[in-house]
Length: 210
Ligand code: SIN
Ligand code: FE2
Image (tube, rainbow, N blue to C red; front, top):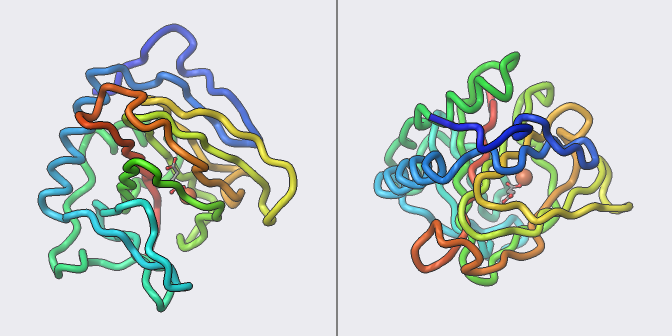
């Protein structure tokens, strides 16, 4: 279901401990995932969460799996239902297959956060630390427009490195980088033809636990 694009695609680029598999998913695999995302969105429509500080995020989100990521004035957390009250749809099989391939030693993911970036959307530097066990990696899949992904350190601040993530790139955030700060400074809107009308989809698979 996921295809290796070309020789060497399985050798990741290592940037500050982040393992970046450039071009891992070919166009067909990207289209399959985009279809799965559309199906998730029909059952669990995307929404723009409010931060604990009371600001509306620029990225629209929804989730699949047992746990869905949520935020409001009361904080960041995982919840078992979409705000409408429906259960989150199951994590699509091709994503589980990709996880097995890139994180063979970890338990299967129980959460897939779907981040939708429209024109001007960005994501501030943050750690992913709402999961129970930081031994398990997070797998991040990019579809559509290019995004300037910034990677930092396990404490806020310090030197950072950035890379443009393209459609079909997959990043493993694990090991020493598991708790490293990261964010998306900006996207190049309409730089990819994968998504009609432009935009970027980022999928993060996680083991939330509990
Ligand atoms: C995230 O950190 O949750 C999203 C990263 C990305 O959009 O590439
Ligand atoms: Fe993150």
